[in-house]
Length: 120
Image (cartoon, rainbow, N blue to C red):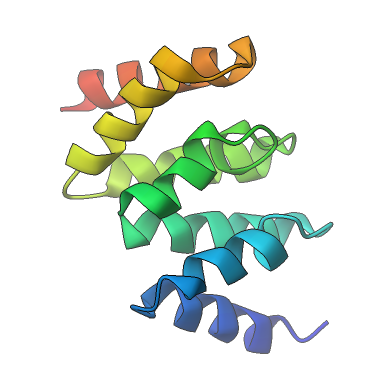
């Protein structure tokens, strides 16, 4: 696998302003069988720091902070904690806590919100 090339593509999509870049990252990156690709995709979506990208990594079961791989989930949480502006993240976490259908997703959102609160 050409990880440098894939890393560059994920990075470029993460920086791209076109809203379709979020869709491409979600469809291809967050659904990859390879942990490293899901990890880098989640980081790119978090760095976009907009409601559409954050909902994918916060409110979706099996993606981002809810990934079954501890490596991907922890990397996503660390990326969220490293954001300078956490306004959008906190809104999405709150929405997820109030509206997610799966209790595991709600619980994870609640835990990440607590981490942010204690780290501020």
